[in-house]
Image (cartoon, rainbow, N blue to C red; front, side, top):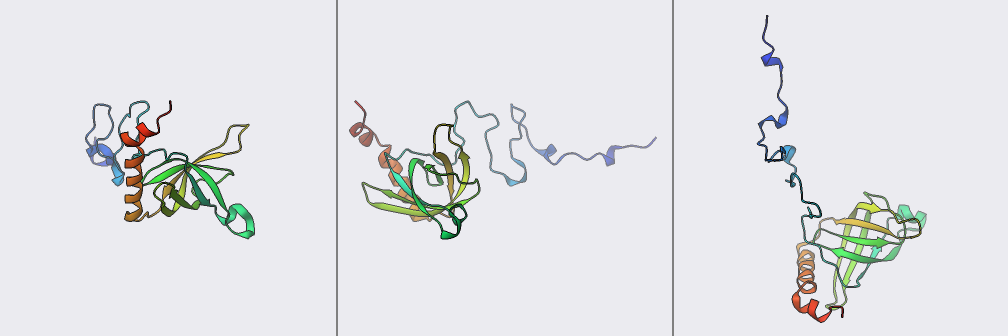
Length: 168
């Protein structure tokens, strides 16, 4: 009889340590770590989002959506914003993976951020609605713009601002 030991290969993850949930403690292939079992309602995002109060961004859609006439710029309410991306409302359908240009202006401080973004996800509208909720990921947002967004978040989530604008 001969031994099969040398012919049996261990999976690439065999050398990883496992946590109490039987999940690898280090992700394979250089992927960023994720919680093994995030708590219900937890947020796995890499940046803290904030809801800009009533802001409307300008989104230039790709030419493929508009035909040969070129991209069209539409108003898109901004539901939330972070240094890495945003959640917006578009008046027409767009494909996941598509690219858009977004202009975000803070009406109080008159600061502007313009950036290219990739459509990360799209939620189709309910049967009676005509708006798509879209998540976009910013592409190569300059440090200067990251700092602007961080400053906006600090101000618009501050106790001072929230006290001044609380609903009575």
